[in-house]
Image (cartoon, rainbow, N blue to C red; front, side, top):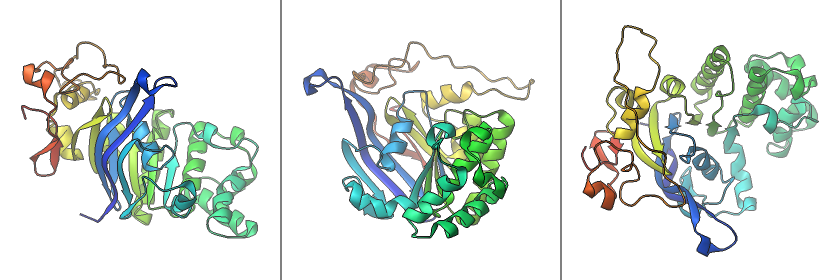
Length: 318
């Protein structure tokens, strides 16, 4: 195993309700622990609203954490000012779900890719534009695309442009937040293959956030499952998909479509709705929907522990 690149311990993000702290807070992320190793892809999955995108923004310091520690390259960055973070920005990049929203419509594609090279790498605009053209070819587009604007490309092409911009500074980590969810299936496969080939060549680490379990299974080395702001299970890809331990993970995987029509899988249908993050349940956060819940689950929060070598889960009965 390579050295840890990103270490998250006890990470919390509470959004206050209203102007007064007495009104309470939405606990979007509540005591999350994660480790991302050099050259690894860590997938983060869970239902909408579970906090996975908030985790991505916290580790990039696009949001300030309420509590906990974020260590990047061995350095604690959770309390650094924006000025102190600036030298680290080149090492941590992001690819968002909607590339059109993350690209300046008034800036040509070449300028959008060249700008980080001028600001962070100190290159001249001429040098940066030449490198931008090379990066566009790297991600499967023509160098002539540098003269065009975002609205002149398809969704898949715009995502390639976003990836070209993200890799322009040779980052150590890229947070890909639902990077393929808005694309057609055939284009999804192309983008996933592109990310894989870039990782083989540059050894970049990915924090791959998605609700698409099939994509996560294809691209990830390890997977973390989140529920109501907490990580409930972490394991290698093969361990998680062949032998899930947590009841929530088992329910998630049972909903994945199976291409083999002769294969019969028992569908686990959860009762109830996801609890309110502003007023989470006591004990295990999953107990209101868990078919195996007992009084202990309702009163005592389960420890997040190693249940098999390299396989962690938070459930009293594993």
